[in-house]
Each structure stands twice: as C-alpha cells, then as structure tokens.
Image (tube, rainbow, N blue to C red; front, side, top):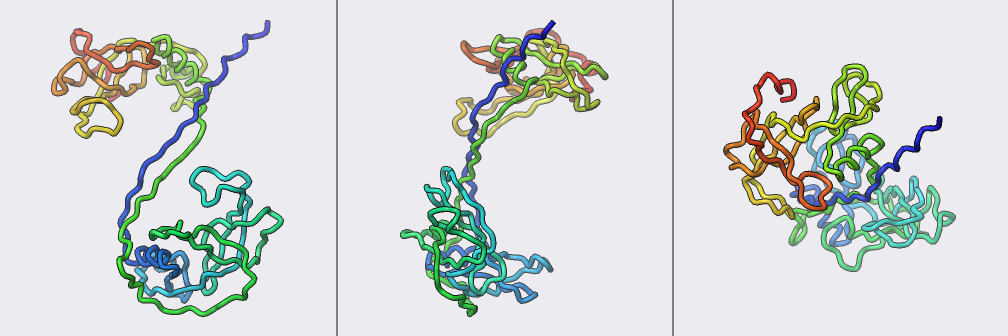
Length: 319
C-alpha cells in the first residue's frame, strides 16, 4: 500500500538587517578620508609590500604599521566573476563583473565592480581605472566602480602623511542578509501543529528522548527521528532572565521575563516570555501554561497555572 505524500515543506523569505557602527583607527580613517579626496592610500608592510586596502597590523608579523603611501587610481584585473543579476545595494544596477584589481604601486588587490557591457569585455590582465562617485562621503562607495582604461602602469608610490582636513573618524555600515528559510520536514510539522495550538515533538528511537522543537535527528544519538509526540501544553520554568532593555519594534514594556520552559513530556526546554505575574515573582519550578491570541501561530506568552511548584529533581537535567 502506497504511503500518503508528506506535506509540503514550508518556506519563507527572511531579511536580517542591522546598522553596524564602528570607530576608525588612524589607518582606516586616512584610507576612507583619502577616497573622499580621490586619493587611494595603502600601507607599507615590514617585508616591503604595499597593501591596498591598508591594514592596521602586519599580516606576517602582527606588528602595528602606519607607513602610509599613495598608489595609483589605475590598475590591472587579477581575477573576475560575472554578476548577471545585481542585488539590492550592490554598486551597479545592471549586470557587471566583480573584479580583483591590483592598483598601480600596490602588491595586493582591491575587490570592486567593473562596469562593462558583458563577460566578453572583461579578462585577467585588463587595465582599468577608478570611476569616482559624484558625491563622496568617506566610504568605499566613493569608488563608484572601475571602468576600462587603455593607459600603462604607473609604478610610482609616494609616501603620504595621511593627514586631511575634517578626517572621517567613524562609519555606519548597513549589514543586510536576504535569504529563504526552509525549516525542513520535522520543523514544518512542528509549525503546522502550532497553528492548531498544539506542540509536537519527535522521539528518538534509541534514547527515547522527546525533542521540542524537533530537529529531524537526535542530537545525542545521531539517528533520524520520525515518531511524533504531542507534549504540554503545560510546563515548568527551568531557568530565566529579566530583560531590562526595550527592543526596537517590540511592544513589550520592560522589565519582563524570558524563560526556558520544559513542557510536560519533553526532554528539551524551549524559551518563551512569562507574563501574568510580577517579574520579580518568577522562579525556577514555576508551573506555566500557554496563552494564545486570536489568529496567532504560536503562544503569545506563558502564565502561571496556579499549581504547586515542580520539585527541582523533576527538571534538574533540563536546567
């Protein structure tokens, strides 16, 4: 008898994005300020090589290095890859080549975009030059991209003090990751069960532990798990923390409590918010139950059941 087809695995687009703020040391400050002034700076390593982009510590000796030099705005492509479908935030919005360019006078290569009409127009050894951005702020984007150049190499390297008026001392870079998440067979079943206000785990056929959320395999025994087990809905607080910093876009007043909860029948604690009790009365062993809001696909929080606290020996292995 043929088995019924398994339900389709869930998929969802996710975006992880945050601003990354950092201060700049003297070398990086000079490099980015130099780009604003259409000047490319490198740094001299102890072995005599000129490193572009510059680094603050010698990659061989780990000693601090600050001997800045100015290199050319033209260079040679050392390797490349064609980008046929540019993504959000990339240097160009039309197909382009990612290239490593060894600028004239440098001994290392700089990664950036090359604006050419197609992959047939780019090759290793190609001569290119910087196309500067019309408005420059002291960032790597001050180099808008590279473009083809017919000139010859200029090997001259000139010492540079690194001093500019109004130097750039810090940057804010937006880190962003776009991806599609597929939770897999086991977690798809877990998520579908939550939409029915049920919590389902999977039991290991070897050690017999029930894991919630399920992973599709036992992390201890390394064998596949297929037997589904409904657990909870009640559980026990095994440990917790008090949150005193309000998260952006999270409409929860601080302080509040986030806890690990061992649901009845489960051998792995999951984490959730505790409410319905003053934060300073939450404790290990507290018996709790889920609170669902209309249309939600997971519990909004857990609240005390009114039962006596669980004995420590019943949950100590899950702390």
